[in-house]
Amino acid sequence: MRKYIRSLAGTAMLLMVPLCAAFSQEIGANFNHNPEIIDIHYLKKTPVEWVRTTPYIFEYIDGKKDPATEPGLGKLIEVKKAGYKIAFGFRWDFKKYNLNIPKPGSELEKKYFGVVKALLTRMAGNIDILKLGNEPNLETKDEDLNVNGEGYVPLVKFMERLLNEVALPFYKAHPEYRKPDIYVGSLPALFEPKQQRTPGVIGLIKLAQNNKDITGLSVHLHIADTLEIPRALDFVRSIMPSKPIIVPEFSLFRLYNRNTGDLLGSTEKGKAFAKKYGYADNMPLYEWYSIANTKHVSNEEWTAMFESRNWFFPHALETYYRYFQKYGVVLATYGYVSQSAPRVVKPNSPVWFVNPILPVNP
Image 1 (cartoon, one colour):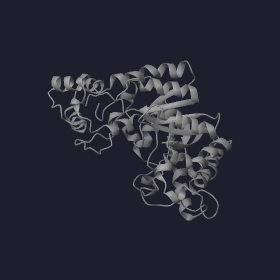
Image 2 (cartoon, helix red, strand yellow):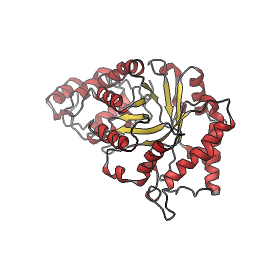
Image 3 (tube, rainbow, N blue to C red):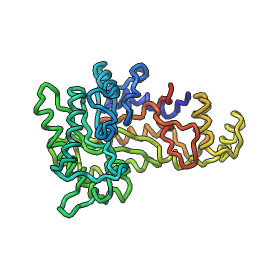
Image 4 (spheres, one colour):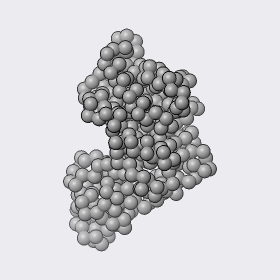
């Protein structure tokens, strides 16, 4: 599917140089939880210096993948040897598997930490940034985001122990490897009042602020309105005034998701678009997405469709960039290769495939 969003992806390409050169900020390619899809041939098409990924750690804990042999980790080592910097972390899907965070010092915690150590052993000196988690405020059960009967927040305690019991001892035991910068997070949806009241969220930001071994905080900015960017970052800076922020994921996903039922002919430009490309005015956008995902529409058609939407703003990445400058974001990584482009898109289908620069099969 040839579907580059010229007004969006093109802006991303233009921003890569100034982010690095003028303001000591950097930008990279985000591969989410699937490092196995990294292809250096396509990576070299853009002037990025960083690659970011956060594998599903329970695939390793459950024995579906072996840290010593997993090809996806080999891809990361390959790109590191090619000169790229690596931002690496773990996605702890406690909520997905209906699991509580293990008690400190328990056998289950030891098992989890053993897998982390095995992953660090495989990656060794190939990590430049180590992220201790990924969207834990969404992937953790509610009771573990709040203060428990023993007076602590299980999520915060778990991340602190992951740092002190695994990450720091590993690099102390292996001085031949440079210890990476360590970040906690990544925290999404921080513009929401609910998240700003959650003890686990507040506790992780305080942990980043107060722990000298933690470089800073990792934040995700999937938004429906660019005003949500300062709402999120103002909240962070109210607790962590000056330490670095990284943004491994950012997109207009919420905006796209909110408009999947929009009719192609809902605007005059939309009617002209539908007529030009042979679609019915009353075709909902999700049906057009299905066509785009299966028939591989042209760059021109993809761009024309978004330009015909009255809710789409083409200069969002420039807005992100201005906020990144203002709030001290030192690294941002953008979706690079689409990892989910369903053949049949339904009204409630998540449309993550809209964001990345390259399609599933470029």
